[in-house]
Length: 122
Image 1 (cartoon, rainbow, N blue to C red):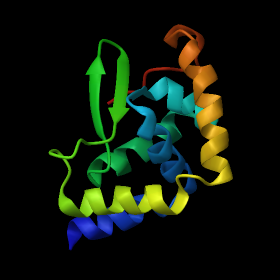
Image 2 (image 1 turned 90 degrees about the vertical axis):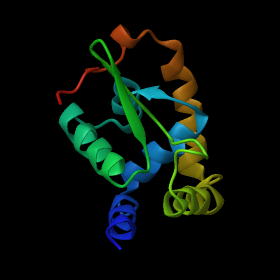
Image 3 (image 1 turned 180 degrees about the vertical axis):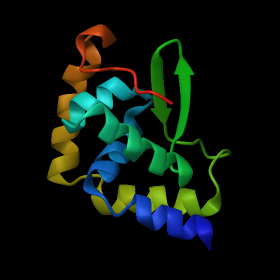
Image 4 (image 1 turned 60 degrees about the vertical axis):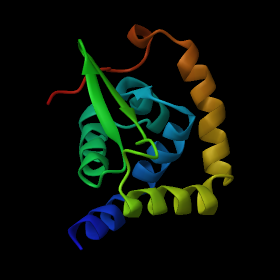
């Protein structure tokens, strides 16, 4: 039951849902998510922590850069996979998701150093 509650809590915020939809295109640096969402680094850090706790994303650190990605088929628990599939079916083609994907193309072209405050603190 705990995992279910963590997942529903994580999906109850527009910024976290937008981040999940953005991650469908592959791994992103947290700085890229900060730029996309237009939120403070500390706010994005908190959102990512909630998504990690729910098992909806995985993260790794490489030097000062923090990266997030969706779990693969083998890595995701059934409830997580079902939630991600539901999210894609329900909102994958919504206007906000489409706009974010266009914006992400621009963000991905930038060097990480050009993007807003990149590293968040553990």
